[in-house]
Image (tube, rainbow, N blue to C red; front, top):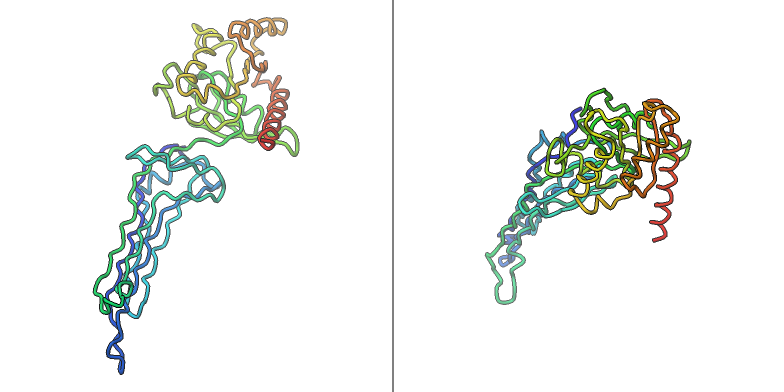
Amino acid sequence: MKFVDEASVKAEAGNGGSGHVGFRREKYIPFGGPDGGDGGDGGSVYLQGTEALNTLIDMRFNRLLRAERGERGGGANRTGRGGKDLVVPVPLGTTVYDDGTDELIGDVTEEGQKLLVASGGFHGLGNARYKSSTNRAPRQFSPGSEGEHRVLRMELKVLADVGTLGLPNAGKSSLIRAISAAQPKVANYPFTTLHPSLGVVRADELRSFVIADIPGIIEGAAEGAGLGNLFLRHLARNNLLLHVVDIEPYESDIDPVSAAKAAILEIEKWSDELAQKPRWLVLNKIDLLPDDEVDNYCRMIVDELQWKGPVFNVSAIRKQGTKALVHAIMDYLEEQKELDHEE
């Protein structure tokens, strides 16, 4: 199935039903008085989170989300039937904006969470509502109000504990394959990953986390070059970022330090919040070097980057060093959960 992480749809809530003008007419009751009932409320449009979906592709084929309108009131003080709400399932991680104003309407991040995106119209009042001691035969009524009409812009930000970043062909997909059951495409050319994919990583039988394979960065990604923000937005919800660096870059004229700095620059240009996220350095493809040169070469890269955070030397293709990386990530995520719980 094609991965779609953006969609634009029109949401139309139902109008409220009009009130009714009526008078009670029964034998032996010549002056029965007004009995026009109220209309029904219009239906609202909701988005509801579900784990059963992982893309917004359904929204590409269903461009109009329309709820039912309320029915008109009736005589004998009968209230019109309310319009049925429209509840549309969306994948977890969906962010919804009003496309006309850029207003953030909300995020759908939990199973079963409902987000109101268009409110139904209020019901109109029947003439029975207007009777008084001085107005015993009112003929006034009110029409129902219109339901909200909005153009929604939806963006899917992948929900994962850990996200990978780096230049194309750094070995991110190979790393995902090495530590999880996910099978992203791997090949010896850049841009093999064209959309995010998720993998569940098990540190042991009862401990696991979710990792996201994100398409590679190129220079100018923050301005939209290459896949641009199509991948950057997916890093926003990750608790930890793994900066994967190829110690022998595919492009022979790019050294590992320059490759790492290019990715860091794009992250900083995209958003300060993303740049402040915890980031670990993963130096990949150490199998390409003689064993006695690995430590010195990797230390040189770390020193030139002036890297202060954790560093892991791995060979994803041979699963060398990956077990230690997985356990370190698991321990870190559990520590963060405990800290969040205490706060």
